[in-house]
Image (tube, rainbow, N blue to C red; front, side):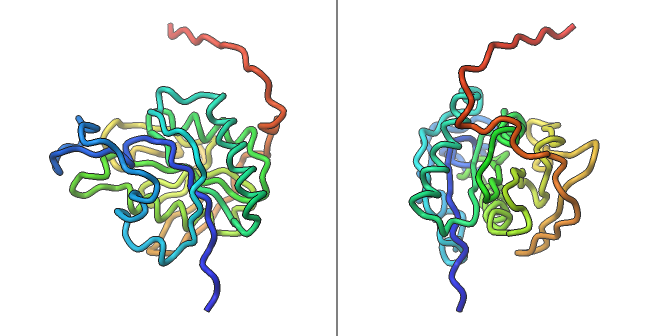
Length: 223
């Protein structure tokens, strides 16, 4: 039997790890704490029987506390983990959906490792009936193990693989909130298989994360 795909998992917070006392509560959650990386894997089914997962240590925070400095630190943590475990074939980052498209876009501009990084999350907390996190995580791990992605960044959500240059969030509660309106998705998941039918438009890193200095503040005024 072949060895299991070796994937690095970065659990950076978000709804995918959130818990509520009421299993039917999908809007007001967090009162029961959150899942650790190991607990997230256990709650997501038999993933350890399908993947060899190495946890990449980061401090989980809500998506509205994320930003360029934290995203660069995630890149640094992945680089250090890959150096220690060169058998890793890809990374998965769980992220709050409020800033998930921005995170994926930023990371696509500075990710310079030779293995893919797949960003995912959830619209419903881990405690909810019909939670979408486990399947999203499974699909992200599947994509991260796919050699066809090379060293690119992608978003896996609701059975679809998106290009970080195009993906956008359209709804605060719908499970299919992420869409690629201009160029369409990169692929779709059919069971445990990834049907990849497009290539990312991202040209690769414009500025590797380890060369980034302090980024200037940019204010956006809506008129």
